Length: 297
Ligand code: GDP
Image 1: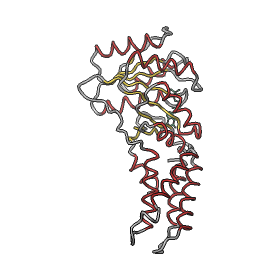
Image 2: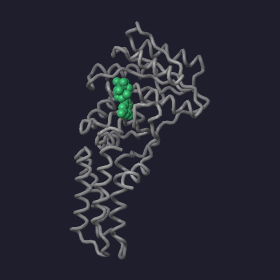
Image 3: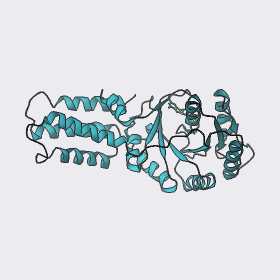
Image 4: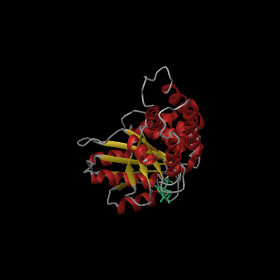
Protein backbone atom coordinates (compact mmCIF):
# COMPACT_ATOMS: atom_id res chain seq x y z
CA UNK A 1 0.00 0.00 0.00
CA UNK A 2 2.70 2.44 -1.07
CA UNK A 3 3.87 5.10 1.34
CA UNK A 4 0.99 4.40 3.69
CA UNK A 5 3.19 1.49 4.66
CA UNK A 6 5.65 4.09 5.96
CA UNK A 7 2.89 5.67 7.99
CA UNK A 8 2.01 2.29 9.47
CA UNK A 9 5.64 1.57 10.23
CA UNK A 10 6.11 5.01 11.83
CA UNK A 11 3.19 4.33 14.16
CA UNK A 12 4.35 0.82 15.02
CA UNK A 13 7.83 2.19 15.79
CA UNK A 14 6.29 4.86 17.99
CA UNK A 15 4.31 2.19 19.88
CA UNK A 16 7.59 0.33 20.34
CA UNK A 17 8.82 3.22 22.48
CA UNK A 18 6.13 2.42 25.02
CA UNK A 19 8.49 -0.35 26.07
CA UNK A 20 7.73 -2.86 28.76
CA UNK A 21 8.11 -0.73 31.86
CA UNK A 22 5.06 -0.78 34.03
CA UNK A 23 5.28 2.88 34.77
CA UNK A 24 4.87 5.25 31.87
CA UNK A 25 5.84 8.82 32.53
CA UNK A 26 4.50 11.85 30.70
CA UNK A 27 7.76 12.23 28.83
CA UNK A 28 7.46 8.77 27.24
CA UNK A 29 3.83 9.36 26.33
CA UNK A 30 4.66 12.74 24.82
CA UNK A 31 7.45 11.16 22.78
CA UNK A 32 5.10 8.52 21.39
CA UNK A 33 2.45 11.08 20.50
CA UNK A 34 5.12 13.25 18.88
CA UNK A 35 6.35 10.34 16.76
CA UNK A 36 2.84 9.39 15.65
CA UNK A 37 2.21 13.04 14.80
CA UNK A 38 5.39 13.21 12.73
CA UNK A 39 4.44 10.03 10.84
CA UNK A 40 1.01 11.49 10.03
CA UNK A 41 2.44 14.79 8.84
CA UNK A 42 4.92 12.96 6.64
CA UNK A 43 2.02 11.05 5.09
CA UNK A 44 0.40 14.40 4.16
CA UNK A 45 -2.33 14.34 6.76
CA UNK A 46 -3.56 17.91 7.24
CA UNK A 47 -1.69 19.68 10.07
CA UNK A 48 -4.80 21.01 11.79
CA UNK A 49 -6.20 17.50 11.87
CA UNK A 50 -2.99 16.15 13.36
CA UNK A 51 -3.23 18.81 16.08
CA UNK A 52 -6.80 17.74 16.81
CA UNK A 53 -5.73 14.13 17.07
CA UNK A 54 -2.92 15.03 19.45
CA UNK A 55 -5.24 17.01 21.73
CA UNK A 56 -7.76 14.21 21.71
CA UNK A 57 -5.22 11.54 22.62
CA UNK A 58 -3.78 13.73 25.36
CA UNK A 59 -7.17 14.45 26.86
CA UNK A 60 -7.98 10.74 26.94
CA UNK A 61 -4.76 10.19 28.85
CA UNK A 62 -5.44 12.87 31.43
CA UNK A 63 -4.17 11.42 34.74
CA UNK A 64 -7.40 12.54 36.45
CA UNK A 65 -9.41 10.33 34.10
CA UNK A 66 -7.22 7.25 34.33
CA UNK A 67 -8.21 4.66 36.91
CA UNK A 68 -5.61 3.53 39.42
CA UNK A 69 -3.79 0.46 38.18
CA UNK A 70 -4.94 0.88 34.58
CA UNK A 71 -2.54 -0.32 31.94
CA UNK A 72 -1.30 2.96 30.58
CA UNK A 73 0.48 1.31 27.68
CA UNK A 74 -2.81 -0.12 26.41
CA UNK A 75 -4.54 3.18 27.02
CA UNK A 76 -1.99 5.04 24.91
CA UNK A 77 -2.23 2.51 22.10
CA UNK A 78 -6.02 2.42 22.20
CA UNK A 79 -6.33 6.20 22.31
CA UNK A 80 -4.09 6.54 19.26
CA UNK A 81 -5.80 3.73 17.36
CA UNK A 82 -9.25 5.17 18.08
CA UNK A 83 -8.12 8.57 16.87
CA UNK A 84 -6.71 7.07 13.68
CA UNK A 85 -9.98 5.26 13.01
CA UNK A 86 -11.84 8.53 13.52
CA UNK A 87 -9.51 10.09 10.96
CA UNK A 88 -10.92 7.84 8.25
CA UNK A 89 -14.43 7.33 9.60
CA UNK A 90 -16.94 10.14 10.00
CA UNK A 91 -19.35 7.62 11.55
CA UNK A 92 -21.98 7.96 8.83
CA UNK A 93 -23.17 4.75 7.16
CA UNK A 94 -22.53 5.06 3.42
CA UNK A 95 -25.20 4.63 0.77
CA UNK A 96 -25.70 1.04 -0.38
CA UNK A 97 -27.65 0.32 -3.58
CA UNK A 98 -30.83 -1.57 -2.82
CA UNK A 99 -32.17 -4.48 -4.81
CA UNK A 100 -35.67 -4.13 -6.19
CA UNK A 101 -35.45 -0.38 -6.77
CA UNK A 102 -33.71 1.93 -9.22
CA UNK A 103 -30.49 3.30 -7.74
CA UNK A 104 -28.98 6.34 -9.45
CA UNK A 105 -25.37 7.08 -8.54
CA UNK A 106 -23.48 10.09 -9.87
CA UNK A 107 -19.67 10.21 -9.98
CA UNK A 108 -17.76 13.48 -9.63
CA UNK A 109 -14.07 14.33 -9.42
CA UNK A 110 -11.21 16.15 -11.07
CA UNK A 111 -9.90 15.10 -14.45
CA UNK A 112 -7.26 12.42 -14.04
CA UNK A 113 -8.49 11.38 -10.60
CA UNK A 114 -9.45 7.99 -12.02
CA UNK A 115 -13.17 8.69 -12.14
CA UNK A 116 -14.00 6.95 -15.42
CA UNK A 117 -11.96 3.88 -14.50
CA UNK A 118 -13.60 3.78 -11.07
CA UNK A 119 -17.07 4.00 -12.61
CA UNK A 120 -16.32 0.75 -14.47
CA UNK A 121 -14.86 -0.90 -11.34
CA UNK A 122 -17.94 0.10 -9.35
CA UNK A 123 -20.31 -1.24 -12.04
CA UNK A 124 -18.42 -4.53 -12.11
CA UNK A 125 -18.41 -4.84 -8.34
CA UNK A 126 -22.19 -4.52 -8.16
CA UNK A 127 -22.74 -6.59 -11.28
CA UNK A 128 -21.10 -9.44 -9.38
CA UNK A 129 -23.47 -8.82 -6.51
CA UNK A 130 -26.40 -9.43 -8.85
CA UNK A 131 -27.27 -5.88 -9.83
CA UNK A 132 -28.04 -4.81 -13.40
CA UNK A 133 -25.82 -1.74 -13.84
CA UNK A 134 -25.84 0.70 -16.76
CA UNK A 135 -23.38 3.51 -17.47
CA UNK A 136 -24.09 7.02 -18.69
CA UNK A 137 -21.45 9.35 -20.08
CA UNK A 138 -22.44 12.90 -19.15
CA UNK A 139 -18.86 14.10 -19.61
CA UNK A 140 -19.10 16.49 -22.54
CA UNK A 141 -15.95 18.38 -21.60
CA UNK A 142 -13.08 15.99 -22.19
CA UNK A 143 -12.39 14.80 -25.73
CA UNK A 144 -12.42 11.02 -25.76
CA UNK A 145 -14.49 10.63 -22.57
CA UNK A 146 -17.31 9.02 -24.54
CA UNK A 147 -15.00 6.48 -26.23
CA UNK A 148 -13.24 5.66 -22.95
CA UNK A 149 -16.44 4.91 -21.07
CA UNK A 150 -17.81 3.03 -24.07
CA UNK A 151 -14.68 0.86 -24.23
CA UNK A 152 -14.81 0.18 -20.51
CA UNK A 153 -18.51 -0.64 -20.67
CA UNK A 154 -17.89 -3.10 -23.51
CA UNK A 155 -15.07 -4.79 -21.61
CA UNK A 156 -17.20 -5.36 -18.52
CA UNK A 157 -20.32 -6.09 -20.58
CA UNK A 158 -22.43 -3.32 -19.12
CA UNK A 159 -24.85 -1.26 -21.27
CA UNK A 160 -23.79 2.27 -22.04
CA UNK A 161 -25.56 5.51 -22.90
CA UNK A 162 -24.01 8.64 -24.38
CA UNK A 163 -24.35 11.07 -27.29
CA UNK A 164 -21.15 12.15 -28.92
CA UNK A 165 -22.62 15.19 -30.65
CA UNK A 166 -24.64 16.42 -27.67
CA UNK A 167 -22.91 19.24 -25.81
CA UNK A 168 -25.35 19.69 -22.96
CA UNK A 169 -24.54 17.29 -20.08
CA UNK A 170 -27.97 17.91 -18.54
CA UNK A 171 -29.73 16.58 -21.64
CA UNK A 172 -27.54 13.47 -21.72
CA UNK A 173 -27.87 12.79 -18.01
CA UNK A 174 -31.63 13.21 -18.00
CA UNK A 175 -32.45 11.27 -21.17
CA UNK A 176 -29.91 8.59 -20.25
CA UNK A 177 -31.27 8.04 -16.75
CA UNK A 178 -34.87 7.99 -18.01
CA UNK A 179 -34.02 5.51 -20.75
CA UNK A 180 -32.15 3.17 -18.39
CA UNK A 181 -34.98 3.37 -15.87
CA UNK A 182 -37.46 2.29 -18.54
CA UNK A 183 -35.15 -0.56 -19.44
CA UNK A 184 -35.31 -1.65 -15.79
CA UNK A 185 -31.65 -1.30 -14.93
CA UNK A 186 -31.38 -1.11 -11.16
CA UNK A 187 -28.00 0.64 -10.83
CA UNK A 188 -27.65 3.63 -13.13
CA UNK A 189 -24.18 5.14 -12.89
CA UNK A 190 -23.60 8.62 -14.28
CA UNK A 191 -20.07 9.75 -15.11
CA UNK A 192 -19.81 13.55 -15.14
CA UNK A 193 -17.19 15.95 -16.49
CA UNK A 194 -13.95 16.64 -14.67
CA UNK A 195 -11.65 19.64 -14.98
CA UNK A 196 -8.02 20.07 -14.04
CA UNK A 197 -8.96 22.29 -11.15
CA UNK A 198 -12.08 22.66 -9.05
CA UNK A 199 -13.24 25.59 -11.23
CA UNK A 200 -16.57 27.37 -10.87
CA UNK A 201 -17.65 25.97 -14.27
CA UNK A 202 -17.11 22.41 -13.18
CA UNK A 203 -18.83 22.87 -9.84
CA UNK A 204 -21.84 24.64 -11.35
CA UNK A 205 -22.27 21.98 -14.03
CA UNK A 206 -22.05 19.27 -11.39
CA UNK A 207 -24.69 21.00 -9.28
CA UNK A 208 -27.04 21.32 -12.25
CA UNK A 209 -26.65 17.66 -13.20
CA UNK A 210 -27.35 16.68 -9.59
CA UNK A 211 -30.46 18.88 -9.46
CA UNK A 212 -31.70 17.39 -12.72
CA UNK A 213 -31.25 13.67 -12.06
CA UNK A 214 -31.55 13.76 -8.25
CA UNK A 215 -29.16 10.85 -7.62
CA UNK A 216 -29.45 8.57 -4.60
CA UNK A 217 -25.72 8.95 -4.01
CA UNK A 218 -22.94 11.23 -5.23
CA UNK A 219 -19.49 9.64 -5.18
CA UNK A 220 -16.40 11.86 -5.06
CA UNK A 221 -13.36 10.19 -6.63
CA UNK A 222 -10.05 11.45 -5.25
CA UNK A 223 -6.52 10.65 -6.31
CA UNK A 224 -4.48 9.64 -3.26
CA UNK A 225 -1.45 11.52 -4.55
CA UNK A 226 -2.96 15.00 -4.25
CA UNK A 227 -1.48 15.50 -0.79
CA UNK A 228 -2.35 18.53 1.29
CA UNK A 229 -4.69 20.01 -1.34
CA UNK A 230 -7.10 17.12 -0.73
CA UNK A 231 -8.89 19.04 1.98
CA UNK A 232 -9.68 22.07 -0.20
CA UNK A 233 -10.67 19.87 -3.10
CA UNK A 234 -13.14 17.82 -1.10
CA UNK A 235 -14.52 20.96 0.54
CA UNK A 236 -15.06 22.64 -2.86
CA UNK A 237 -17.08 19.69 -4.16
CA UNK A 238 -19.02 19.44 -0.96
CA UNK A 239 -19.90 23.12 -0.99
CA UNK A 240 -22.01 22.48 -4.11
CA UNK A 241 -23.47 19.01 -3.82
CA UNK A 242 -24.11 16.49 -1.10
CA UNK A 243 -21.18 14.11 -1.44
CA UNK A 244 -22.43 10.81 -0.02
CA UNK A 245 -19.33 8.67 -0.49
CA UNK A 246 -15.68 8.98 -1.36
CA UNK A 247 -13.48 6.60 -3.34
CA UNK A 248 -9.70 7.07 -3.05
CA UNK A 249 -7.74 5.89 -6.09
CA UNK A 250 -4.16 4.97 -6.97
CA UNK A 251 -3.18 3.64 -3.57
CA UNK A 252 -0.92 1.21 -5.43
CA UNK A 253 1.32 4.08 -6.53
CA UNK A 254 3.82 6.17 -4.61
CA UNK A 255 1.16 8.30 -3.02
CA UNK A 256 1.43 9.13 0.64
CA UNK A 257 -2.34 8.75 0.84
CA UNK A 258 -2.82 10.52 4.13
CA UNK A 259 -4.11 13.73 2.56
CA UNK A 260 -7.00 12.08 0.81
CA UNK A 261 -7.82 9.89 3.79
CA UNK A 262 -7.89 12.82 6.18
CA UNK A 263 -9.92 15.03 3.84
CA UNK A 264 -12.72 12.55 4.32
CA UNK A 265 -12.97 13.15 8.05
CA UNK A 266 -12.83 16.87 7.43
CA UNK A 267 -15.70 16.78 4.96
CA UNK A 268 -17.81 14.24 6.79
CA UNK A 269 -18.33 11.70 4.00
CA UNK A 270 -17.41 8.04 4.43
CA UNK A 271 -14.88 6.30 2.21
CA UNK A 272 -16.54 3.35 0.52
CA UNK A 273 -13.81 1.86 -1.67
CA UNK A 274 -10.09 2.14 -2.38
CA UNK A 275 -8.69 1.79 -5.89
CA UNK A 276 -5.34 0.06 -6.11
CA UNK A 277 -4.68 -0.66 -9.77
CA UNK A 278 -5.66 0.08 -13.34
CA UNK A 279 -7.63 -3.13 -13.87
CA UNK A 280 -11.38 -3.26 -13.31
CA UNK A 281 -11.03 -5.61 -10.37
CA UNK A 282 -8.67 -3.33 -8.46
CA UNK A 283 -11.30 -2.03 -6.06
CA UNK A 284 -11.43 -2.87 -2.38
CA UNK A 285 -14.24 -2.29 0.07
CA UNK A 286 -13.10 0.15 2.72
CA UNK A 287 -13.58 -0.63 6.38
CA UNK A 288 -12.13 1.96 8.78
CA UNK A 289 -11.06 -0.28 11.65
CA UNK A 290 -9.68 -3.09 9.53
CA UNK A 291 -7.88 -0.51 7.39
CA UNK A 292 -6.14 0.92 10.46
CA UNK A 293 -5.41 -2.55 11.89
CA UNK A 294 -3.83 -3.57 8.58
CA UNK A 295 -1.86 -0.34 8.48
CA UNK A 296 -0.30 -0.90 11.86
CA UNK A 297 -0.57 -4.71 11.70
P1 GDP B 1 -10.64 10.54 -15.09
O1 GDP B 1 -10.07 11.64 -15.93
O2 GDP B 1 -10.82 10.99 -13.68
O3 GDP B 1 -11.86 9.92 -15.65
O4 GDP B 1 -9.50 9.45 -14.97
P2 GDP B 1 -9.30 8.06 -15.71
O5 GDP B 1 -10.28 7.05 -15.24
O6 GDP B 1 -9.17 8.27 -17.17
O7 GDP B 1 -7.89 7.64 -15.08
C1 GDP B 1 -6.71 8.37 -15.28
C2 GDP B 1 -5.53 7.40 -15.25
O8 GDP B 1 -5.40 6.85 -13.94
C3 GDP B 1 -5.72 6.21 -16.19
O9 GDP B 1 -4.47 5.93 -16.77
C4 GDP B 1 -6.15 5.07 -15.25
O10 GDP B 1 -5.78 3.81 -15.72
C5 GDP B 1 -5.39 5.43 -14.01
N1 GDP B 1 -6.01 4.89 -12.76
C6 GDP B 1 -7.26 5.02 -12.31
N2 GDP B 1 -7.41 4.42 -11.10
C7 GDP B 1 -6.20 3.89 -10.79
C8 GDP B 1 -5.70 3.15 -9.65
O11 GDP B 1 -6.38 2.86 -8.65
N3 GDP B 1 -4.38 2.80 -9.71
C9 GDP B 1 -3.58 3.12 -10.77
N4 GDP B 1 -2.31 2.73 -10.74
N5 GDP B 1 -4.03 3.81 -11.82
C10 GDP B 1 -5.31 4.19 -11.84
